[in-house]
Length: 70
Image (cartoon, rainbow, N blue to C red):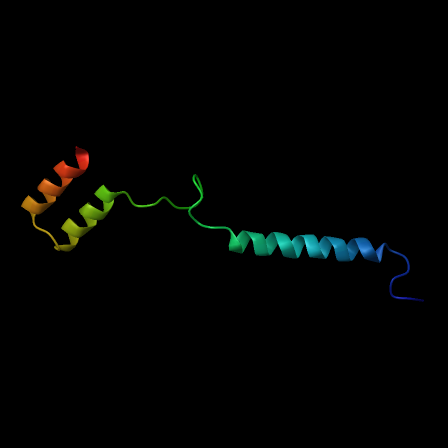
């Protein structure tokens, strides 16, 4: 009895290769595809974080926010 006789051994190998390629593709796919997983931060989001962390004061925040909205 040979290893490759019967039970369509070639198809088993083919499906293993397909699954391995599919799993690798999932992990290699970029995370910033539109509509996928996470959104990129907007400039206003970054500005709000800077204000919340105390990097900038209220006046600077308001000035920068007005600049971003114009």
